[in-house]
Image (cartoon, rainbow, N blue to C red):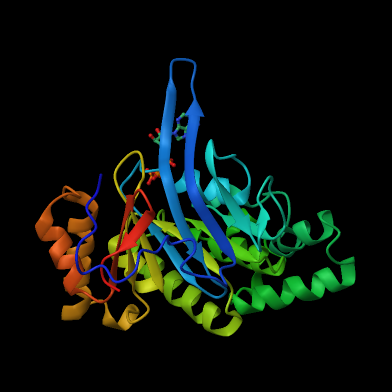
Length: 300
Ligand SMILES: Nc1ncnc2c1ncn2[C@@H]1O[C@H](COP(=O)(O)OP(=O)(O)OP(=O)(O)O)[C@@H](O)[C@H]1O
């Protein structure tokens, strides 16, 4: 049984710590059944996302980040725990949760950029054609691709294709935009530009974002809060308050120090008392560890 440290001011399950949360992931275990055995991807993961959060899920390869995103999207059902959006149990995919993936081939190659952005609006009968066209053009303008509305995907760069995918997602005005390492396959310069653009877009639209990455730097730059998952199977290690960082603070001492702390939190033995003591001294680290009452937060 985990000992609750003396400094603990409150015992708070992360899912109940945010009463106005839009998304609640509560004790979610996700598994795959293979012909040989069961693969556990995440173990009792809990967190909450509020409106206009830029919530980043960060963890090493194979810790279950993509699986978690698929479960939020409604493609996979938890074997334990539950996922609630606006207080409603997530049971299946829905237009209120749109996913942008890493792959560049998520656009229909036989449709123009405009047709791609309009497609979901028409297929889901969200809008009639004239209004769908208007909204699609507006979203393409937001991502700087107005001039490419009638181009086909194969004529676009990787970054431009990702912008179309983002425009298509935003056009649906989802309750949550889910992004699974959308910039991971881009070169470093384009990736940085896309991060800048995503932040600028967020400033304008204030959408709610759940963003998956395994890059500590990307998490700090983009996230307002960061959930750290342990190596496989993913368990919650900590939550970091990161709203104070942006692209301009990437080289700063505070940024680098937090990046180093995150690295240790992710990869060092979670029972290391030094690590816990360090977390306790940092107001921005919320160390979440399961105990019998749920989770406790050592830095309140
Ligand atoms: N379809 C599947 N069938 C069986 N096991 C799977 C399947 N998909 C993923 N897994 C396993 O589930 C675990 C979590 O995988 P997942 O892709 O969610 O991790 P991830 O954190 O997103 O990794 P990465 O950062 O490398 O994309 C891994 O052990 C993986 O091998």
